[in-house]
Image (tube, rainbow, N blue to C red; front, side, top):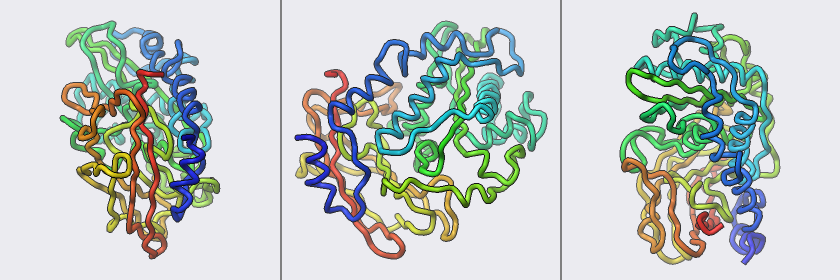
Length: 385
């Protein structure tokens, strides 16, 4: 059965159908182009990491250096993979935002090396040695407006795990710390920002650092997604949103943004936290009374764990939009499990044939009216591509 037929049979009855998705062959081809092809996507991490600044990994400092252009292009391609898969417009690189993001990545990786706590989006307030002030310093600006990630592995030559394409993948997964899905990021704010329908450009920065004393290889990623033009003063980290934000336009050919979306998605990018948001301004949507159910092959119930949502006040556009998040236990289905690392669930692990799930979301208040949504997701075994 093709995705087009699925859309007609299952989605047309929904109150607000999503934008058309890719058929199975297209979904596989798009995934392979970003995540599997030699020299691209996740495969680029090992090759790209040695070129990432700071180039002298044994000497701490405040020089953010320059990211290899090909590596940076793969990072943007990873962001755009997720957006294209749900029908959102692709993002373009903004050089000024990327420069600030690169500075923020350096600040973030140094925070890991130096063991600094506090709010990573306010490095000046945390006493960061590489941030001169809390307003116009480029590292402060980039940190305040970016998704940030940092991690480390043992050894000086091990692949970086938290920068470039892998950093983007981790931000989109949006687990918290600890086993399972962990604690933190329950409303997938990093994913929601990356998938905002209001943005058209982005800046990305990657950094790595080897701590010879601890024999740790640190890596970090900063994704500056909050458009500079949204702020009354784009060069002030404390600036409020200005007229540029309130005049931002939304795409008109997509009603909702779900992950995984209707149609076909590889298991390796099907993450433990499922999410759903509407392409509407804050205050027009209320998920507080919504319920989610899932059924395998339309019959076998899938247990739903934690359910969370955001609630933006009426009259405010929201950064990002309101989102509904739930954690299904796919492991109750035969030939489906979670791929794990250190006890943390990373992504679905399907064996064999595609697994079909129907998702029903009921009692979403849209402009005060109770509205129901449903769609069908096919999770594919990427090992078979």
